[in-house]
Image (tube, rainbow, N blue to C red; front, side):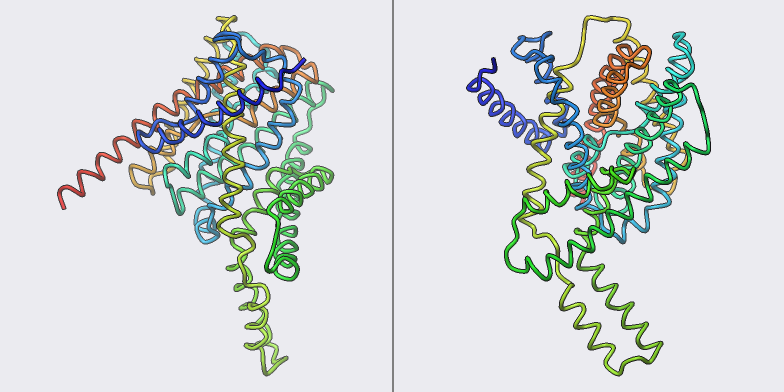
Length: 427
């Protein structure tokens, strides 16, 4: 039976420690997720044994799905459409290069250890992408802005989808012993197209509703309810709900700019067609009706606090599941983590247009997380061969990549801060 008082105490203590970890990150540049994993490990079976991982595994799929969904939605509020447009091509270049290079290297490591090809390929795709749960909060705390923010934020969002699509395709091949390259490509295209379309249309509808119905008062929770409906509808259409959430967030963040853009387009069209003598007045009227921000600063702060809650407990959960009993899996996970770090350094060849700090930032952010953990659980549920090994390797890689990436980010941020302070002193 669950001890309610102990659970409440544990939740409160973890949240306090989460705030403390975030405070330390702001002061000394050590990523807070590292502390959260240590907390999870400390309360788990290999620490003080306060929590049995089996007691929370039942709720893990629901929690990881919602966390991934909401972190992408909240992360969209830091993406400006102008920066997005400038960084889209560069982001796709960085995304696909890093995803496929790291997936291939992981696959090769697994083959060397004598796993079969499909198991190796599946593991490579599961661990091929960076974690949006790590990237989004980190970029906020490092105060990264503009094009480089869009590149890294989009990479974390897109690679989550690439991991899901390619891993699920390999699982289908393993289960049915059928492989069709055309089907795989069409699935990927459908996921992106459906998610993008649903997210954009849902965003436009919500902006109109806010402008017409919730002009003065709006409950923050009703937007979250709408977000969940968007997720359900996108998944129902065989799209990716998390990516739809990202597009929905982008629409809300840039609602005022989009309304002004639509107003100008309508104005130009009417002028060109000579339909009305008052086209400018109509454009102004359109802007007056819909050129409002669909979210307030206080609402965005509320969402950021939910993201903080989800991020805190997700990384504590990862630390809780870290298994020290299988040395072989730990060594393999550590080896793969190092290979991921090395493969990330190859991105310097395709990021020459950025300054040194931004190039090194791209190379330093390679932690795995939510998507990998969620897919590993699906592998176990579907009873894929070597499922237990894949889960063990996945969690080991998540922990080791977070540690390695956190250390690299700390060194980079510390050096960058020192340089900035030195410049100020010289001036």
